[in-house]
Amino acid sequence: MAELFLNHATIVTMNPQREIIDDGFIRICGDHIADLGPSSRFSQPNDRMSINLDMRGKIIFPGLINTHNHMFQTLTKGLGDDRVLADWLKDMTFPAASYLDEESVYWAAVCACLEGFHSGTTTVLDYMYPHPKPGLSDPIIKAFLDTGVRGLFGRGMMDTGQQFGLDPRILQDRDAALADAERLLQKYGGRDERVSIWLAPAALWSNTEPMLKGLAELQRRYGARLTVHISETPFDRQATETLHGHNELRVLEDLGLLNNKLLMVHSVWLTDQDISQAAAAGAAISHNPVSNMYLSSGVAPIPEARRCGIPVGLATDGPASNNAQDMVEVLKFTALLHKVHHLDPLAMTAGQVLEMATIEGARALGLERKIGSLEVDKKADLFVFNPELSLKAVPMHDPVSTLVYASSSQNVEMVIVDGRIVLEGGKPTLISETETVAATRQVAENLRRRAGISIKPAW
Ligand SMILES: [Zn+2]
Image (cartoon, rainbow, N blue to C red; front, top):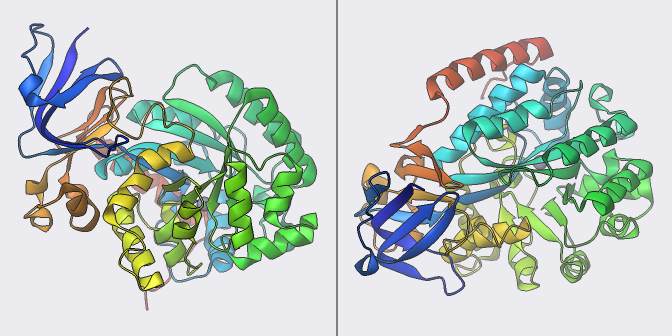
């Protein structure tokens, strides 16, 4: 088999020793890392089909893992600025979501995956909660396959919540939604490791007890993982109490869903008791600092959760509350937010941020044996960082500090997912970026007009 050699790079492995190899090589065979180590041990391949790339002056990091997204919101970037969550949902996101169709969600997802590559993202969990019509799951999975990203598709659910302001046009028929989730689990379960299916009830207050029981049953039968927005704002806590009569963690526990297959999103307003309960159950958290700041939701207790042993992954959230797919930007915001919130520069360090974006994010998704670090036999998911592509990254004394605090997507030169080069010289290799830009602009403008969303002046 033709092999790919990346030689003379600085390799930030994120292995258990957090080893950084100053002048190293990686040998990629098929979808995995067959060998890596100091370049002094490297021998020139005999096979003429093999590709040998000189990476002098460049850094190789494990691919970044984006644990929460709503890719359809690519089409509504900037339309919901300067609002709290409830108004952002009511005035912009729900109306837009009501008019989604196959073409619009496909191009939104392709554009989101490509934008993610530019900031070193190799794995993304897309949480597709609105299904105003059938058939909107498969175009997103097609976008995963067409772009080459490692894609986790969260089949979103919501069958109640009008009393809390949820738009009835995006409520789903319970049986149809559960049947579609089961169809996807059967179709994609274990077939291609680059695509997997998750269960994704939008929130506990937007799902009835029978729906949540149906999801618990699917989890038992298929071993599927589940992700849900938890305590993004105090409203989530109150509405869940009103609908179910208990707090969010108790509702999950009573249904058997508070377990090590659970990824709680946001978790800004978790109490100390919630954190201990989640830690004891082995649940994980997806931290979305840019979105939490954008919607003025609050600061999630991430240092506290990590101290209790909860795996925390990082995420952009949907591009309508970010307004980008830029994981490099998320790295810097994560560090700065917790430093200033705790008035403590050690509350979050560059190293801890990179852990959450790589190996700890992999743990949060249950994928730590496959991705999240550069080690022999793991999947070849990585990106090549070239500090010379922007003055911001010059000079570079420490690659981890430079990546977190002084870089941008301009520095991401190459991305490899599952052993395949999906971005090279800053350009996607499997799908045309020019065509994607044109199609995305078109479907975004069509959607905005159909949904009757006006552009709010910025001042
Ligand atoms: Zn979300």
